[in-house]
Image (cartoon, rainbow, N blue to C red):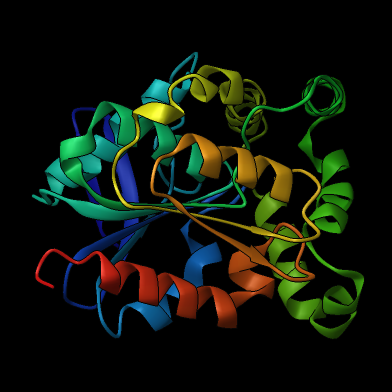
Length: 267
């Protein structure tokens, strides 16, 4: 599997297809493998690259402390390492936060943006809930949070109908390095307030998408982002909870492909 190395930092990624670059940014506790259905579909028309973010998979995990900017810097390193001038960025959940800040800080490197199942402007109750999960991970370890996460992410019918997929997601969560996961989850729990006041600076073509039944990255949050980002598009996928790229793959892939094609530089 390809890796890009800068000094002592390694970025693990996969690449498939030709065309304009599309970069996929996964959610907290996961890695590039969550994007399999998007890689297979989008690579028919685009050059698709999915990578492991800091603290995840086979990428860098050694820093003592992380902020959201470190994840942005890692993405910039990846683009530079692959000599990519501009890319379409698709960020899921925490990956959406990284894509948001990248769009603010490096607008010249972005062809389009998609924030999928992303968090913005948590209410006090929502903030308390996610910080309580951080405390639980600190005190009891990340394994105790897995079943609850799965129940938030997937509909019950999908879980019963796709036990192998659900088990593979559980296994991926179990494989996380405990300290690295805690570092990443802490960033995820706190970064939305850092981003909220910056969203109006985003001026690239932007698609905001979430599931109708997603309680953590709710339609209300998606609507608020849409209202802040001038000219953005909003898509709410009926009935789906958090894990849009997996449970809602068919419709998500079509929406993504259409949006990317609409904003390709050669059209």
